[in-house]
Length: 203
Picture 1 (spheres, rainbow, N blue to C red):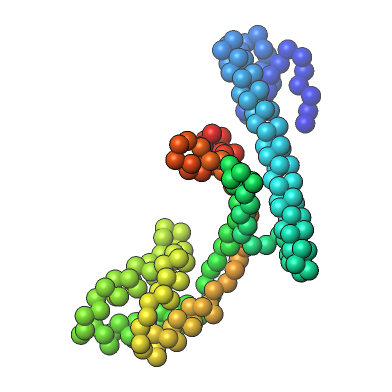
Picture 2: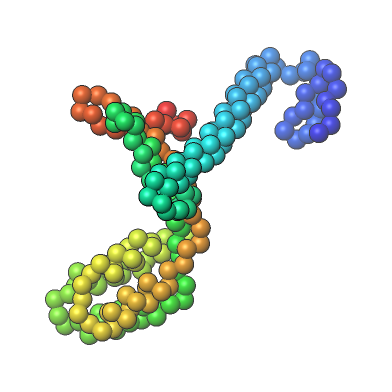
């Protein structure tokens, strides 16, 4: 980054502007924004450090706890809830997997469509609505995975439906995961747990 000469400020277009020509309010705004941004960067770095330490500590504790039973487990995976002895605090580690479907989902949809066509004379209109809703795409062209997987909970005695549900199960592809840590404190007379916010908007 080029050093800015004394008596000048650099504008958003990269031009050097004499400080004497800049309004005092613009200078004060610049100072305020830079101060807030620098503090935000410091806080962000602390949160990254905190998150790394928390995940490491939880993984180490899970492994230590498992050793009491003579087993070894991977401490980095799986959802875990830890409580303080008095129940005041609760820490949750959650692993959220992002899933998608491969081409076998189209085979499942074709089998389901066959079923609906044959059932059209019956009283299964509600199933047709559920299926059509499940396979709708959003503005980005993505299918709601939760709704599609929800079809598997429906108990329908039809071989084609069974094959369709198997195709859905086999079409699932885990494309990534994201880890979360949430910390709660029991507050108030009701003893409900309230999240300790680590988000500026939610604090």
